[in-house]
Amino acid sequence: MQVKIDNQAVSGSHEPAVFDPGQGKLLVKMEHLGKVYGNGTIALQDVNLDISEGEFLSFVGPSGCGKSTIFKMIAGLGAPTGGTLDIMGMTPKEARKQSEIAFVFQDHTLLPWCSVQDNVMLPLELRGVPKKTQREEAARVLELVGLKDYMKALPRQLSGGMKMRVSIARALVSRPKLLLMDEPFGALDEITRQTLQDELLSIWQQDQKMTVLFVTHNVFEAVFLSTRVIVMTPRPGKVSATIEIPEPFPRDETFRTTTGFSELVRYVSGALKH
Ligand SMILES: Nc1ncnc2c1ncn2[C@@H]1O[C@H](COP(=O)(O)OP(=O)(O)OP(=O)(O)O)[C@@H](O)[C@H]1O
Image (cartoon, rainbow, N blue to C red; front, side):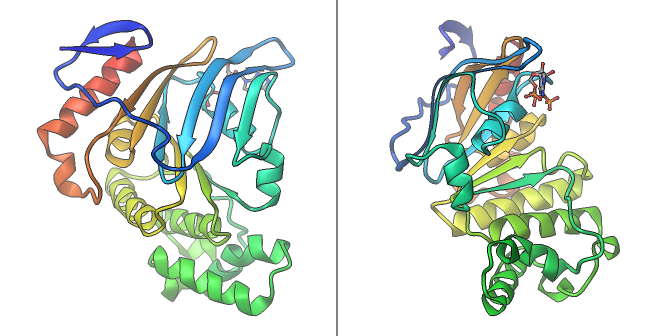
């Protein structure tokens, strides 16, 4: 069985179907995207990627392949030095100003002296949204992440998993079209990590139009969560493979134990070594 990866034919026991972007509305378009830092490091070279509304895309690749650089540019923090990056017909900076983009990082970055509720309301407070709406929206997202009873708690009173849930709630409170998650579960233990993966998928499915871009070093996590896995190679950072994960949603624990899951994990791992 032959599967095409970046113009090289490689063998694999499981052949993922070819993904046809353009099924949903085009959300992000990268054309010949490149980034050379001031010190001459070529972080990205000729990245071409179309991302449609409602996708869940994971980026995997060795350290230094440019995953964070892509995220920073989508977030409008640092401009490309080559090619184009279009987000819903806007530049990244314009999209960010319109609150179309939200972020979650491995470090939850919660304000330690503010309650869970105040932390979650912060993005709305900064935009001058009326207090009543802030409280309603915070209640909505804290319900989504299962923390409605912890509204008045301080971050130090929460476990690592709960802090991450607050961080996710704070990102969701602006109802973003694009959610960027940079190794959000990397610091969590395996059980908490899997629970949060399940919860994240459930939240994503409730908002069919939200697109999630997710960086992870964990191939199991990438396969479990994603509609597509983007495999990158370093020096210079390039997309070396785009692999569709054809398993339908909702996905749960049973998917993790199927042969199809193991085959996809093997396949993505193989693409990473290529
Ligand atoms: N501000 C900067 N100035 C110079 N070089 C940089 C800068 N930021 C990143 N780089 C370099 O660009 C390349 C890509 O870095 P980037 O952080 O995007 O990779 P990554 O895939 O996210 O890595 P990791 O998985 O370790 O987070 C690396 O070689 C890195 O050293």
